[in-house]
Amino acid sequence: MTVVEEVEVVVAHNERATLRVGDVFLKIDADPTRTDVEVEAMALAPIPTPRVLWRRPPVLALAALPGMALGRLGESSPASSLAWAAAGAAVRTLHDAPLPPWPGRQLDALASRLDGECEWLLANAVLPTELVTRNRQVAEAALRPWKPVFVHGDLQITHVFVDDDQITGVIDWSEAAQGDALYDLAVLTLGHEEHLDDVLAGYGTDVDRDVIRGWWSWRSLVVVRWLVEHGFDPSMPGCEFDVLRARM
Image 1 (tube, one colour):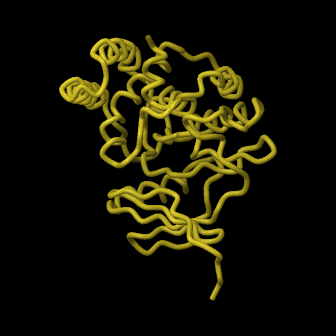
Image 2 (image 1 turned 90 degrees about the horizontal axis):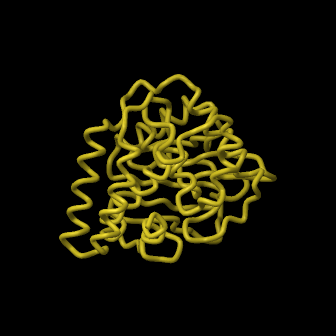
């Protein structure tokens, strides 16, 4: 039996919990379909992902990745411009890969979710009306037809690991699907707009920055209720509320 000094709770809420035990991450998910997607997506992805050690539902055991996360929302990233560019190149490799066999979220559903979350924000006076209205307008740029690609779907900087300016792996694939390439780029740079140029340099193609800004607003508006209900604080410096204020 392996002896470890401690068990670290990485994240825990009523949908999912992730524990680190030595060099092993244990993911416990209330919805087994999310784990199904994660395992299949990692098998299909053409970029580094954690090694699956074993799976005994509802638990998935993954090997720890070398290196460190690209950064955290609300904090300055310790990673270099080269590391951010490497992240952009990895995302491009993913987007150029064959599509996964399952569909992603449809445009109508995304627009409907935005409408519902904006109504909730206003009805509960969570944010000023002008802030919600302005970002709702900005988000319109993202809600247009796109050519689907293989997207990670939740490409937060905490999910991208780097070592010596190289990508060592990307974690948390439960929202991978067919989707909009610019959504991945927007989530990766959310709250870190200063690194957008680095990411796009690595990505290697021109993109519509208004669409990326639209996804910044969309993501920040629709996630507030979930964050609040699960014990997170979107009003922390550099987090979602500040992202929304930046659009003013």
